[in-house]
Length: 492
Picture 1 (cartoon, rainbow, N blue to C red):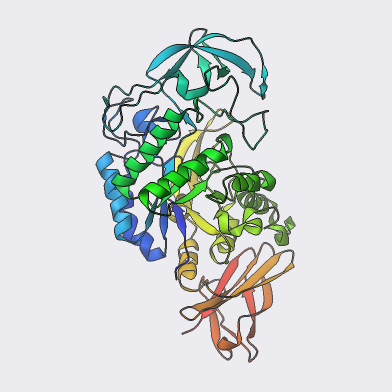
Picture 2 (spheres, rainbow, N blue to C red):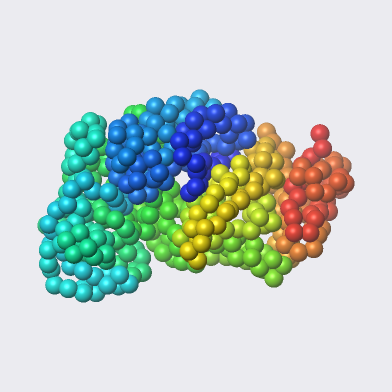
């Protein structure tokens, strides 16, 4: 039995034209670490072509094959390189999780005159005008692709709203009037009155032709890559019933139990996340935004943070079987809109909390394993140089998950500044003991199991040099250094 471990194999500032080649080169290393799945960025062509991260989706069917939006390749490489990368992962036993950006499209090829109502950006249910004509870039013909792979043309009937009126050179939010209604689709979240609209040209999922085209894309992409899972972008802005339908058809047509995880970023709003999961009938997981925010808060508060609260209000505590846990991601990294990074000193503790416990499906972030360096403009309007150092302990924490984080879990969460737990192991794996502290060094007496009576354990992270011995009843005093984590494994 394996412990499933995902890696987000990209970040917002991934260098251009390198990623697919790097994935192919690093696939063997990922398998060696015990990584069981790799979440790759959106593979299709974005609005700004070879510079697009992929969330400004233009043409889903252009994987770096056609001269569109100023380049043939995507930011990450060519179509052939992409397919080679997915094959390399599969050859090393690593599942492929592809990023689906279905909420919106950007960079329309032609404009159309459409009937629309301008709405209040802070309350999309409040109309600021009567219906009137605007000019919107809602026609997507993909001239560089010339109908290859799909001859579907997206037009005004495929969208519920836009954020720009070209006729009047006006930015805003405009609700399009069509045969599918003169309102937004209903969402779980009532933020901004109705949060159907996020950006660009918002897709109209009530249009049967749209649903058919997206399913066609999903099946076409599976024929090329045999992907094992899907990461669904911005699900807060898409009807959960639609995703339930889409995932049912993908699984039925492929004959595979395709994994799916949605990005519903709502820190502190566990009720909305669980309502969304309920509405999808358990067909998908969600990233645990609440846990990531707790990590961010704890890392900034230092010893003032009560570690016993680290799982309060989190998805992994409420619905562990549908929680994908993270320490950071491309949206929370410095200079991003949802910036909420976890301080470097706390990252080893946070990774121990997601990698070495029984609940949740942990996802490692690329810069934490490999490091990252980039420049971008901050919210102050100034350019900033960012260095994200790799988490030195992460490689050993991954080995610990692969080899030792199995069996019965016993928690010792009595101290506000120190947590501990043990994993007893199973028939195939020896267990481990974990102690972490956000203040002074800590010693916690914990039960690891009588099977280890008279045996010694060492800190595989090398923070504590001395071994500890398990007594005849299966208990021992396990330690950690100040503001640190130690993982104790049996000396063989």
